[in-house]
Image (cartoon, rainbow, N blue to C red; front, side, top):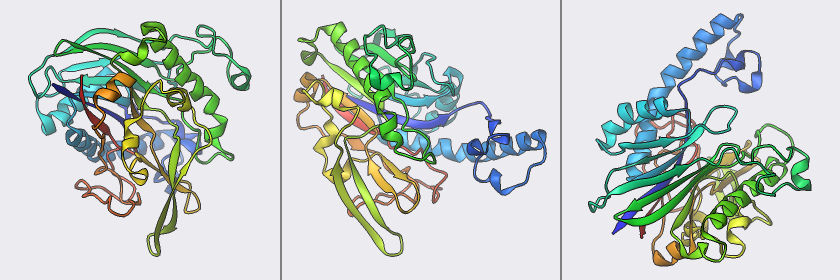
Amino acid sequence: MTVRLATFNIENLITRFDFSGFRNQLRRDRVMRLYDVGSKDAYEQMEQARVVASTDDTRQLSALAIADADAEILCLQEVDNMPALHAFEYGYLFRMVGHGYMQKYLVEGNDSRGIDVAVLMREKTRHGQPIELVDIRSNAMLTYADLDLFNEALAETVKPHDKVFKRDCLELDLKIGGRPLTLYVVHFKSMGNAREPGDGRISTMAVRSAEAAAVRRIIEDRFGASHAAKKNFAICGDMNDYQEKVIVTGSRRLGYRFDHVREDMSALDVFSADGFAVNPVERRAELDRWTLYHARGPEEQHLCQLDYIWLSPALAARNATAVPEIVRGGQPYRTPFPPGQEVERFPRIGWDRPKASDHCPVVMELSL
């Protein structure tokens, strides 16, 4: 008996309009910068028209990526609220997969933009085994002080009684065919604005390291530090950090070069350093582990893994030969693929947009 588990940052599944770009150029969409808009009312009308015109293509492509992942349990990041999730599932996913994801779970978290983590589940696996929710808990209210995680590196940007998770660590106890599986769904602190000077990844790493340490503390407090390795748990989500990357040099005209490098440090070392959890995507070839393409102009480009399904040692050992899939058909054409990895893009994919998301879904079939 197996279950397909996936994670996907669906990128701004939002039902609200953001008009802050009228006064803040950094928040204004690039197409709106082409026009001289004299009044707030005119800006709001144009921004609504822009968003509505682009959203249908984007959400069709998001649904195609989810359909290709074909997961029975789907962990999502960047979801506005439950009405947005219902509208997307009914208006888009249903057209792709039918009555697939009848179980939906979302708890409002801490994000200043209002984007949350969520979980969609089928009622049964493809083998007919029931997928049941036993319990669900939000950890959004935990502070650094609660978990004794405050340190000098954090003191530069946060306070002891600030909340640890920038969104949440949503904890779900499931039974699949009567067998237990505990999920921890997260979306860690971003690496900062790509247009800001300096290394945003390094400057924000202390916050992500604390988030990872908090997830680990929650798991070890739950199961016991010496027993957690024997349990069935998975930590899923967009972790906004990487332990390795593929540096991309070159251009479309002259061709690209791809070089794999390891990072000296990562917030995710909290999970991997002593075998607390296993990243099964490392079973793929070094150049074939990426879930996102980052570019700050031609001089800075890389591919990296930001999206993870970390497995407990017991679950990883039980699935020692299983290799996660990465769905890349929704990537825009500007994304350079290493040799041999090219895929057929979904219909209507653009150079930069529309696209399914800037992230790729990761999916793995697990035996419990």
